[in-house]
Length: 343
Image (cartoon, rainbow, N blue to C red; front, side, top):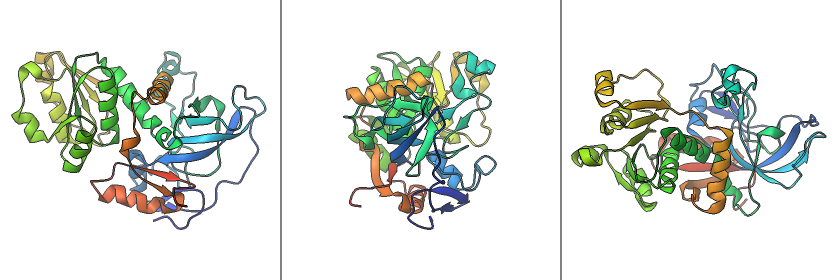
């Protein structure tokens, strides 16, 4: 649990979040901006941090949070194009910019990659200083609550782009958590025929409420039809069974995109890969173009992630919110806010 109701949410140790004041207020460097985070999403990665699974990377005392919307409150002397009052998301990816990977346009998989909210202080605070280059503008008419889900939507946009999905192809999404459903929304916007498979009945119901055909894994097997097998399968569950489902469901020549984080090695039948000429693609984070496309999808109304918001609570309730997400199969996305509704 978090210790108090002050403005920052920091990692302490496994199972413990630290309340406490924000970092001491300092002046801005020439290329920095000050942002007041409005809404901050709790991500599956945050849950892994909370459970102690990333202690080799996340230092005690680090302010968490990498999914955010906010408002600029101050700009550094050398910053152009931004002003107090601008509505923004923060792209939390910080790459070196000079290595071979960055130079070839793959900065999001830079060997020296740092992510705000993991490797450095993130958005779960009332006063956040970030590099101006990490700001992504959002329209003032976009609800900041909805904008709090643009970062995971950027993940989905990247996953779909990696898949090379085109209109009228069949897409299977394995795992109907927030990212899985955002992939489903993005794939539908691209014109695909979308099928969702999920073990949890409550999440299947959410998928159906969003207009998707959602089945349990055994039902998917029972309905299998070679003529209607998916061209693309997105493995979002991070489970061995989910990986098998995605891989074996593919039509010959299909593509499997591995989105879920698998904490241990998995076995795959490589003879099947050879015989069917299927492709296996990794997908991590997003490029800047994916983030900007995600903003455009929300601004245009083509994708609305707001139905995925289960609750909005204050920073002081962060510990309880983390525990709810870990204990329940019914929560989808909980947002933290310095000023939650009813406060």
